[in-house]
Length: 202
Image 1 (cartoon, rainbow, N blue to C red):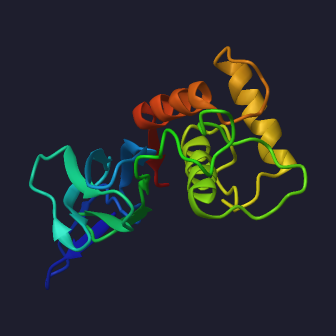
Image 2: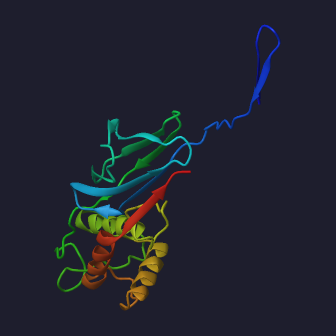
Image 3: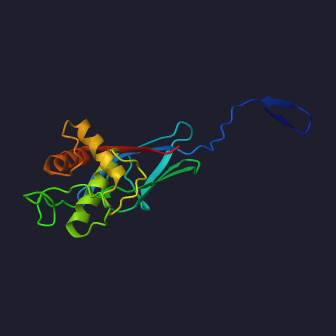
């Protein structure tokens, strides 16, 4: 309540509701979990129930008014900022994993046709094409949540990775042999490229 009094003692009370907005907007982004090199489309929504949204920027560049999507580059770190009328900000760092096409067959791979990557009980470090396939598969499995988000993508075909591959194979009704053969890799490629991840601030 505010009371106003003039020089001769007349006064008047005024009651009003004052909203103090210290809450940042809610920023929500949906994008592919993994993509081929190049540009992908991310869906972006911002809500602010108090003072309203002033602007949204991606890497410092404003997103057009009313825009609900933006083209971003896979494999690049992007910073999204949503700001409300009172200057409160929500910030998100977004990075879509980049995955180049993996070879279908190669003399360095296992199997008669050179189209498989088998579990190595010795735990040796993989090199060349074998390393490329191994790391690519892990990237895909993280993207579809068949591996934990903070999984350390490495160069060894470890026992925990073998178990995760077997669980995935079971989920897509493939023989759970743990071998990264053509059918398993094709299923992973299909699932990873259609899988979309949503992140929300707040």
